[in-house]
Length: 466
Image (cartoon, rainbow, N blue to C red; front, side, top):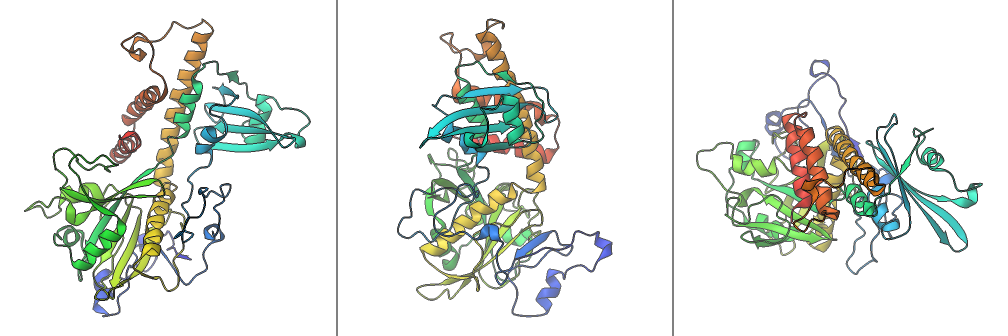
């Protein structure tokens, strides 16, 4: 389904044609071509999709797909992919119910945090178990019918994770531990997204040309209204995606929508400030270059090359080319390209990959954009960053749980003054979780490259923006 170039040294194989060579051959032009030395794949609508992308009817939670609240009229069966079922398991199966938490500070996997809950359902008994490490969180529902007795905590850890063997766990004794734990688990859960939208006119083949477009054609304006509604940024109360809503420094209007409970803000190149004399248009690139996924709207057939926009963040592009623009119901041809370490994401392109303007195309496009970002998190660069972030947050969480457990036993020195409110009581819940997150993130900043510092700063801001 996906055309993936071999990862070879540049001197070891014949490079792909340059865009100038493609243009010299004349029409018809492809929507997208690979960079000269590869590094990206292009989705092939003629190839059968991977089995992981076959999904119709009800969404299956165990398969990594989010469960919907029932099929509403006008639902075309496009499903949002779940980045990690375990991230939502604690709130769904543990929070507000009797359960136990245990931690282990000495293991080859680093710090571990385990939660276990007993459940009886229709004369059957189960154990819900979550084990968290710096690499990942794992959730399982174990049937006690298959076990001779309720396992010990070290045995449970081994059942759920083979690497967690012969370990010694300590109980968490802090009564408000659940709020700290759910905040840690849900640091991966993201209900806000920001996507770039770039306008490519006929013949434009460079970043500078793309970012100097100021006028929106009727076809482009019509497409933007398909994506969402035009909102005034001044005093805007929804998710702002890093745009200025107080002083007008990022333009006066943008495109915003809410799709299946996800807030989406679009960074539209033509609506971001234009700076006379700035060939690079850094005000525009500052936002779009820091997005992970972008839509490229093509007025006419001109090939797009994914490395045309220099960015460490951009990992996937959805190309939309307008056709039949003078009819009452225009059509759009779609292509998809992403970095070679981004796994496939749905929904798969139909064959031919042409959509008529309407609610089905909108659902397809928004679903594809969100799934593209979730898939990009699994790329090598973001996966490495996520491991470091998880490890730092987990270390901070376990330090906090251990300290509070010691205080509950009368073995600690009491609450630190910085954690107290004006009335002498300690702040708990989300505020405390944010403090722990920012503390470990700040410690991590001094050890990371410039790219990683940007990413670490960006993610907490996105999560805790209000």
